[in-house]
Length: 152
Image (tube, rainbow, N blue to C red; front, side, top):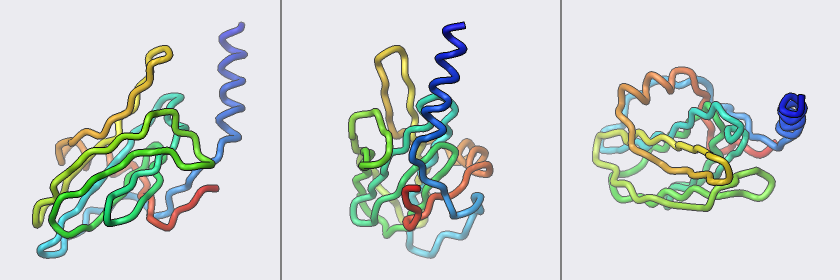
């Protein structure tokens, strides 16, 4: 009985959380502009941690929110990019900020996945490169978060 009450309580807490609603629609594969690169970051979610929403900053390109079951897409010039994952005031993100460096090659798309997990009091998050086939299979069910999407 205590477990059920705990789950109901957590459900009420999460229902009242501040969120971001992606407005970019479902994924559509687009042609890459000649000489450009593309960075796509997806997030599956599917646990209590999925209510957390980080901010993803792509140095020199801007920042986006990344709720569960969504993705961001940045068309960039080829080059090296630092990608930051961090908390924004008004949103819940229980993880330490971190960053990774990626190299966007001319006429290529980089697919990254934000992976989160929690075991007891230990929670971790990381950005990991994923294969195109895997990413495209997941992306067809996700909404795109645009640069202009804001906290609700």
